[in-house]
Length: 394
Length: 128
Image 1 (cartoon, one colour):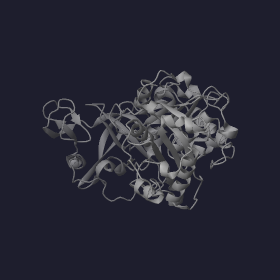
Image 2 (cartoon, rainbow over the protein chains, first blue to last red):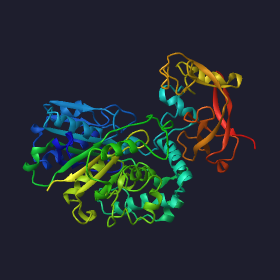
Image 3 (cartoon, chains in turn yellow, cyan):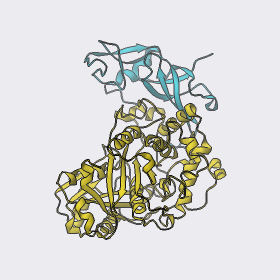
Image 4 (cartoon, rainbow over the protein chains, first blue to last red):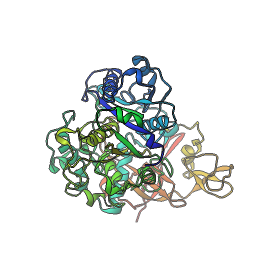
């Protein structure tokens, strides 16, 4: 670790209640998470001088964005030296990367980073309509998709998966292991939304969404907020628990940032971000003790496994076959809180929270044995990708 | 329906005469899609709608089952690599074939769906 990342640590974490249709305001959930994270970091609200979020307060669709930084700043009456919220960048973890940069640059000392979703409550008891469905005239980027009734990221990513299956012989039975592993781990997470046992037969019998994606390949919208405190590294000694160091960030995007024009749809820009991350550290994939990889759709986690070099390009199917390698007691425990497939779509930040918990040895029943020291966090799918390599302080 | 008010307008109305057109660089012929008035291959700034064959290969596809728009029919969304420049992948619907018979790698050709003034470029398998 020699880059700007060395200047910052994740000193505290917090998370609100997580669940389906909590019926609570996004700002309330955010405050719950923030206060927990601030206390965990051994700080008070007055110590926070930076604020960072993804995607900011711009509603893409209801419940997606959570409160923007002005609402949180005002609610907590923060006095800020630096603040940032937005969604154009290296996926959801960009808010963490930005915070690390701000601390490294000396613009802030303790940055509150948060991600809040209220998609479940926003959706109510109905289905979320397709993106762009019902729009009479499609313009901008949507003109290339909605006229052909591509109305969900599921459709886009199904085509990535189909191509992967075509080129490498990846099977639905293999892909199922991502969902089954998530469900097994979710059963050990008190906050997970789906905990009932799930079998391969249940998976294969579930209704088709967009071939080859079945229902259990798709994550589940929830309400919840996650917060972390990114602090100047010196603060680590003032905290009464291990902190997560940021060994390296991966922010690269090399190629056309397009769902369909990306050069090789058996890969994603995760490929760029992961290569960039490894270029910034002497650690290697074999050093990673626990992996928290985005599973908005099951195949995304497989793509991240390949991108991060835990297996070769095209080899994720055989790699996860049977589920043993990615199980809690396997060589590479994956999505130990149940991922977004069974834990709920905290949109990237559930993975971050869980990675820190695991490094601190505080993951309860689902704690990975052997005191994990290195955690990989991958966020994003399609043309979005960002990743972090975290290590535990002594 | 797509807008016809943007730089892409020609693309959506092109099928009136049964011909698919993409924006081409006047200097080097590179097809720029989605249309932008700058050629990433040669930095040229002069561009024109350029006729293409309408033939290509199905790079990937999905059969949609989920009724996002409330209709509830099965339909095929595909990505077609154009014969002239395979890195141009057109997102489209694959028609004229039972969804269960669609395969990656199928040769396909354009067929326009008339929504005058828009002619949606869909693709169907090339008859063997």
